[in-house]
Amino acid sequence: MAHPRFARLERQLVLVRAELANALEADRRFRALRAAGGGRLYHECSHGASLADGLAAICSGLESVLESLANEVDGYVPRGEGSHAALVDAMSAALPGVRPAVLSERTRALMHEARRLRHVVRHRYALELRLGDVRRNLALARRLVPAFNRDFRHFVARMDRAARPTSRRRKKEGR
Image (cartoon, rainbow, N blue to C red):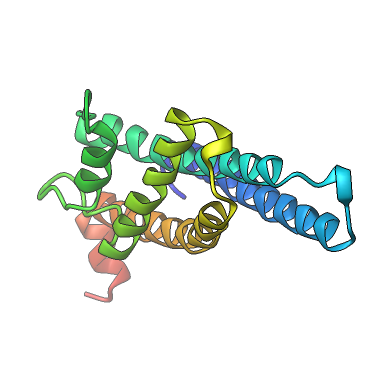
């Protein structure tokens, strides 16, 4: 990645991918413990809370990438009530003359789904989490993280192409 700001954000995405790997491993271990008759060692609430915290961190990490882009490229980050949804929506729309869309419509929809679980995690007690719902969100994160990474790489490539001097682009394209 050519521009330092994109390299910094790539490091943030490495952390998000690591968080997803940790959540998947935690789920695997909890399920193995339960299947092995973990008895007093396995607790469904702990299983759900552990995964929910990881999933909330994944969502927050992805949003921080979007927030950095909004701040540095757009010069504006939504604030106040509904700002998380507004940020996701803004970054899935192109700003003519400034930047292409960062997120595809598919990734935008996945981000909104992931935000819902984070809201529940932040505003309710772990005892109110249902393991089935949390595990469905883990499956969602398995789709969201690669989709977000793909969209981000596509966005960076388009920004890099747009930043190249015209004469160099023409020469490279064989004109």
